[in-house]
Image (tube, rainbow, N blue to C red; front, side, top):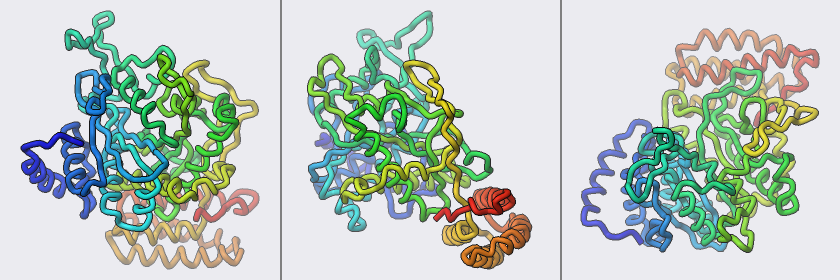
Length: 474
């Protein structure tokens, strides 16, 4: 649906040279891992649509008649529609302009679906119609800014209050009394048109470790109206509480084979969130802005939070992490497997002790008694599998280091499998020393991950129960 552009051949050549040369980019993808600007995103969408043979429909909100379908500075808001199924799914990235990888990940997902690399892609295409929004906050993305600046649309100048510009967080603008930014209205009207059955939102957070450990976390799974909280259990008779947990457990399971990626539940400080003004929350609540949603359409919604902007010095793994997680979510919906997951398994996903809910309507609501920690699970087998995974990824600069560590970890996992925990305790100290000895034979990220797991495992082994709480992390 995109208007044909005379310069398409020039754009294609630009993409071939620029994206193919990006450090860390997937070798078979035109979608790189470098942070994209708005024009680059548009160019990639055009190329993907051209290559799709009719599978992909790229359009702007204004092209389908939504007058508010533009940013505060007047930029078009792009949608990429793909798939032929009856289930409609909304996937968005970069609602916060300084959280870039949602753009790369959604474009990479589109590319994978076009190419139908395996049966799972075909299943998604057959069963779902997916509406991708690669860059929700286009003005913020251009400025590398979380929110967006409000403009006077008559003068074209930024609105000023006491001489200062007014900034709005677009992920807090779907609320009664909100919808201050014009793009919030545009996207809302499109949501009413689409009426999706599920939504995924891709975000970033700061760097973090699992509670009480030095093991890095690379991905947090989020539900903006927290399960068991003040709001979610009362929506749709508790159905969304189950569906959101089932979606997040589906992602949790999909990430387990990738030992370089580590997953927990999203928190803010010592609290979980119950944010009613977020876009995902507005969808679950069925918000009826200016009477545009009189039938009360609503849908469950979840989000991903990538930790940091580099993993072991690279951007590409974090893009791929979001691709794997979102693909698992989509395939779970397409296959129906998501609906078969036990929602109570959400309580397997690690989280620190929780003392309250951070809300945007009542401050902090205490939890009494506080929710206990769900600890990360570490075992000798998990450490062995992590070494093997890092060897597969080429993270060892010295093959001797990989072999020595793998041999020792294999022996440890053998003792563990036989229940000989006294031998695990005895030989784990030697493994710890061996790891430090070979520190220079692996990347910094590989060492940090193995060191964090080793330290935590040793600590658990020396607890009074002598390691009975230490379990296989899978």
